[in-house]
Image (cartoon, rainbow, N blue to C red):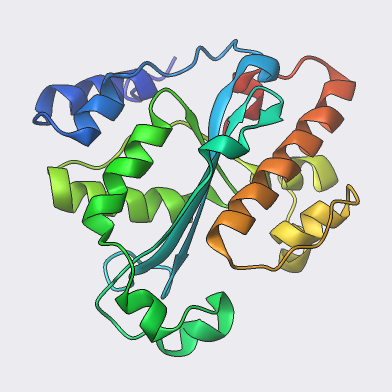
Length: 227
């Protein structure tokens, strides 16, 4: 037992005690799933964020897309997409995400979108392909708005893919771990990349394919899926 290491529940409880009434506090008040929860019952939110770069301190969120995953089903009725008015020119990043300055200028304020993300994420696990990006940017926004970062439970389809194709402790080619390369392993359709909602849906589909493969080697629980 590592006495110096706090559990996710402890981290959330500490944050809950220190956060004023806000969408973040409402999010923190919802319990995390039990680690023994089977994949068939696990509630997740597949999230994708398009940004001007990789560092929340210097870069900006340009669009957000998310879709709920209820057990082994994707709930398209809960899918949402937001273009964010970041107050900056998109610059060279436009070549990746395709968003124009005019689209950004007419978008929503991130301050108004963060509560939507937190409400959708209540009681759910964050699902993304390389969850560090989504967690960093959402947490940074929460810290700015509410004075505290966002403790989160997460499942990472990139990490699951790495485990499935090479096992623990290996370093496969970076290209092979990209979302679209991972999807090709299961014959999943090719979508336009770097559109936030499309990428969130693509991640959710990949997750379900990965769970089906993992089920061949024993029951899949939240603990087994966690990053």
